[in-house]
Image (cartoon, rainbow, N blue to C red; front, side, top):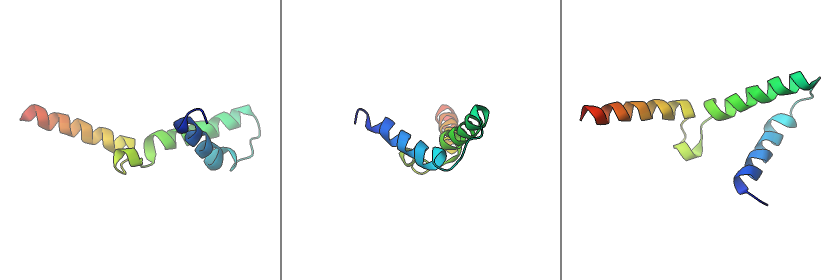
Length: 71
């Protein structure tokens, strides 16, 4: 194992996307993988963000910055 983070991601990609679909052609594969990547990076909760989605975490960060500037 070279890098635990990469190994974990590769396993997740394989289990959740690649093993679930039969790709008709390269364009189809790219579209499905792109949709999975968007979901993975933007919509699913992450444990490293206290169970928030990256969007929710970003919005909370913006709110915190505004509150800090007001004080």
